[in-house]
Image (cartoon, rainbow, N blue to C red; front, side, top):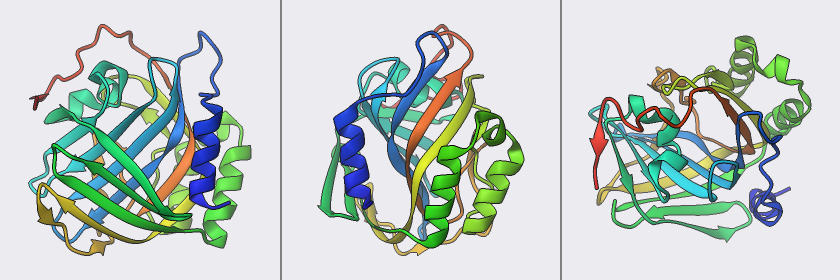
Length: 241
C-alpha cells in the first residue's frame, strides 16, 4: 500500500485502538526523524485519533544550536508537549498543514514558524518486513530494548525508541504498523534552506527518546501510561507564544 492510501485509511477510521481506562492511546502517522546538513533535525506526528482530545499534529524541531522546540496545533496538554515538555526549550501553537502531491509525496508546513518540509517516500523489502513484524508482535516483545535495537540496526537507523519512559514520566509503547524510508527531502526552516539530508554519525535524542539516524516514515499506534495531567507541560523551557 502506498503511504497516502495508508494515511487515508487511518483518517477514515478515526480509531485510536486503545481500551477505555487503560492508559492514553493515539493512532496516526509521521516522520520518525530527519537530519539536514544545516544541523536541523525534524520529526512530525499526525495523530488521527486520540483518547485525550481531538486529533492533532506536531512538528518537532531541534535547531542547530541543540535547542528543541515543538510546534503543535492543539493546546499543549493535549499534544506532544504533554509527554516531552520537560525536555523542551520551548513550544509554539501554530497552524500545521499537510498536503499530498502524489501517492508517496507529502508536504508539511507551519506558517507562523516559517517551516516547510517536502518528502518523497519509498518502501523497501526491509521496511515491509519490519512493518509486518511489528504489527504482529506481542507487546512483551516490543517492550524489550533489543527489539528497537534490532529493528533500527536492520534499517541502518540506529536503535529505535519503541518503548521506554517519556520526559513526563509516562511509560510509552510504540507499535509501527507500516514503514517507509525517506528517499528524498527538502526543507525551509525559519526562512532558510536547510540543505541536503544527511545521515547522523551520532544519534540525537529528546529527553532520552532516540531520533533515527536515517529518515523513516511510519503509521502506527502509541500508548502512554503514567502520571496524571497535574504535571506541568514545560519544566525546562517556556512557551514561544
